Amino acid sequence: MDISFRSKALHALLPVTSLVVLCGCASSPYPVPGEEHSTIVIEREPMAAPPPPPSLTLDAYKAHVARHIVERNADRTFSGRLPPMLPAIVVVNITVDRDGRLADVQVQRARDPDAARVALASMLRSSPLPRPHGLLAANSRAMTFSETFLFDRDYRFQLRILAAPQ
Image 1 (cartoon, rainbow, N blue to C red):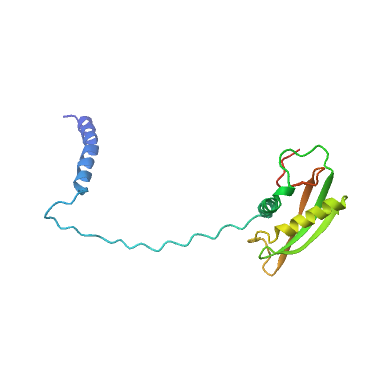
Image 2 (tube, helix red, strand yellow; image 1 turned 60 degrees about the vertical axis):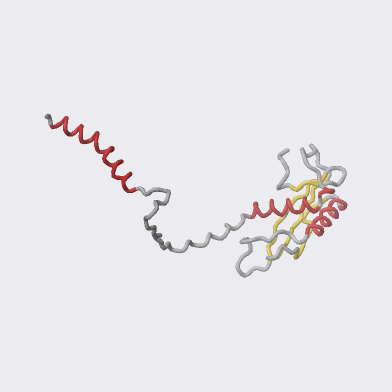
C-alpha cells in the first residue's frame, strides 16, 4: 500500500472517528430507569452590574426638553413645514437645576413682545423639565442653555431643535 494512499485514508476516517467518540460522550435527554442521576453545580463568578447609562450630550438633552415642552403645550404648537417667513422668533435662556426645576428663564432675543410672553408662559407650564443627568459640573447647582421658539402668525410655535429644515 502506498504511503500517500494510507495518509488519505486516515484523513478521511478522522472526522468519522471524532464523531463516534463525541456521540459516545453524549448523554440521553431522557432518564434511564435504574440509573442514578447526579447534578453538577458549576459555580460562576457573579456578573458585574451593568454600567450606568451614558451621560446625555447637551444636544440630546435639549431635544428631550423640547419634546417635553411640546407635550405640555400641545395646543400652542404647530407641526409640519415652517412658513417661508416667520412672523416671530424668540430665543430664551433656560437655567435648570439638578432636579429639572426652572431656576430662571429669560428672553435673550425677541422683536415681538406677545411672542415673548407666549414663550415664557410655555416654559412655565412645562416646569419641571427633565433632569440634566451628567451635564452639570461637579460643584454646579444649575446649567443654562438656550432654545429658539419659531412662531407662525397665530402665535403657535415650533422649537428650533425639533423643527425640520426649511
